[in-house]
Amino acid sequence: MFYWQAGARFAGANIGYKLPGSADTADFSDLPFNDIQLPLTAGINFTSFMNRVLSVRLFISAVPSFNLKVGDNPLGITKDEINSFLLYGQGGLGVNVAFLVLETGYNFGFNELLIDNTDSKPGQFFVNLGFRF
Image 1 (tube, one colour):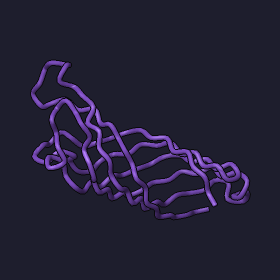
Image 2 (cartoon, helix red, strand yellow):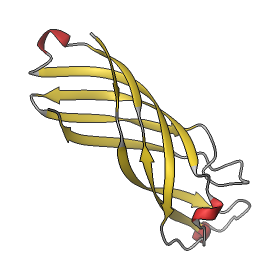
Image 3 (cartoon, one colour):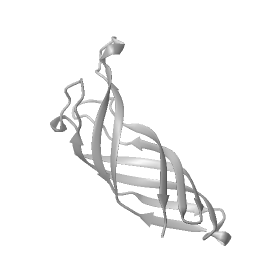
Image 4 (cartoon, rainbow, N blue to C red):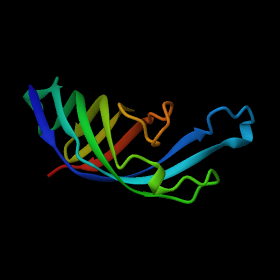
């Protein structure tokens, strides 16, 4: 009924960002970046009695993340201006049907994405589709 798992994933995200103090909505832009995430997950499987056929579960995760690259952006933000390490908290709902996995949830950054900025904690909803072996 209770489970845990560890993993690794390559992720790309576009975080909406507006320069601090700017009132102009034209200064709002996407900040694309890539990272490696190492989720450590614990959860509860409500249908553990039929786990290989159907699984409905809730989960929470601690997700250490190592930023690799910042894409081109109109704000001119470079890799040197973002923190190389972020810690996310994550929670969500997962459904497994036979070998297919569908998860949805929310990721919340505990520390700032941008160095020297106190209003850049990333947060995002996510949907994962995968296969299990």
